Image (cartoon, rainbow, N blue to C red; front, top):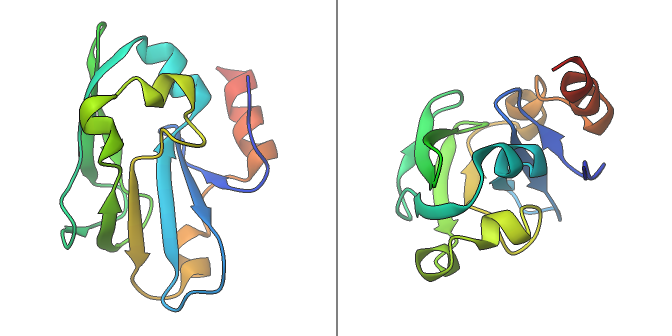
Length: 133
């Protein structure tokens, strides 16, 4: 099971990737390979609209599979810059490429990115969480 080391992870199985030096920082968010595998075949994704405010630890959308519906939690406070419109027609991208084309939203991070994402797990910490499960 893939756990890329270039991003941070939540205990709810979301990943966060901040790249570049944009100010304010932009965080791309998705669900992990573990999460998509546990959910099964993704058939629908409900995501917030551009401009919506999100709060760390609060639901920002849902992923529906053939097995269940699961909330997606915001990893930080901020404003939605974009959502992955490709998922409207092909939600199965979350299954086939959870760390690439299956990303969910981009959030303009409010405040200091290190403070906002400081409590998230690195790849080793997330792997430890999976190993304990």
